[in-house]
Image 1 (tube, rainbow, N blue to C red):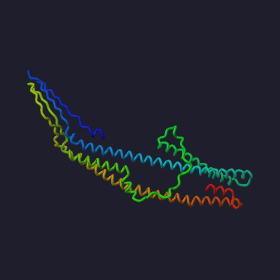
Image 2: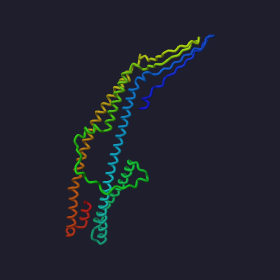
Image 3: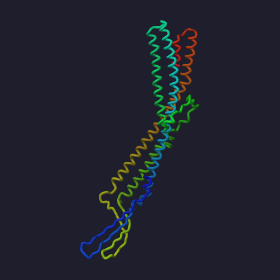
Image 4: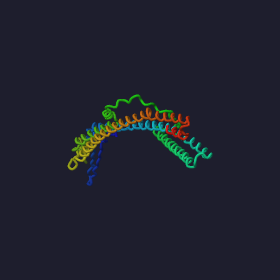
Length: 326
């Protein structure tokens, strides 16, 4: 479309022959070669409109590429975290299996009832089920990441590193993010390019509303006496019925529509930035709470449970349960 906007319309060649019905008159020949003048005069405007539309498409493609990068990173970190969680569930499942095996031996020795044995086995089976579900979900996440990375069959043997990266010491500055997003978001810049194209199209529609057709060229005519004449030819469309009012109204409506979409898009971008900032801060607070409070507390509980078990103040099943919680 951008290339076509820079091309002139093809000229029109018209040839007419008039055959006499009474002798001895000769054949009359007329010929005209006319070039559309409106297309020539509006060529710069049409090229400007096409350039703005082309820029909008390029910006939207860049926005899609950035979204793909973000989606791929999100999928990678999710997979990495879920892989570590699966390892933790397998550890808890191992503790449950040890408890179930011990319960079976105690039941065979007559030390626990059928109910207690079934209770231990049911707890172990619940962990087995959760582990299997997480393994299946992890495989689906790998395939999702393979698709995002565009990997073929021979390239899907990759592995993630063992641990997630540590939390950064501090977050980057979170002030003025809304204005930064409006200045740098490619989708918003594409909307501005759409607006520029629509404004130029409106101006073109207004300027050419009375000139539906205007052609300039030359005309040649040879009469029956073989006398030839050559002169200018003008082809003018008379705006009796269509004065371009529909094209102008359409262009104005499209300009208003794009303007409203820009305003709505700016509001959505500001809301997205605010929501993302709050999610980031909340996620950091939760991660810090896990790291500094919850996990150390669970490890301390396990140490205390081990001490009580060593002092024969706590049963083996309570110790295994503390390990599962940790």
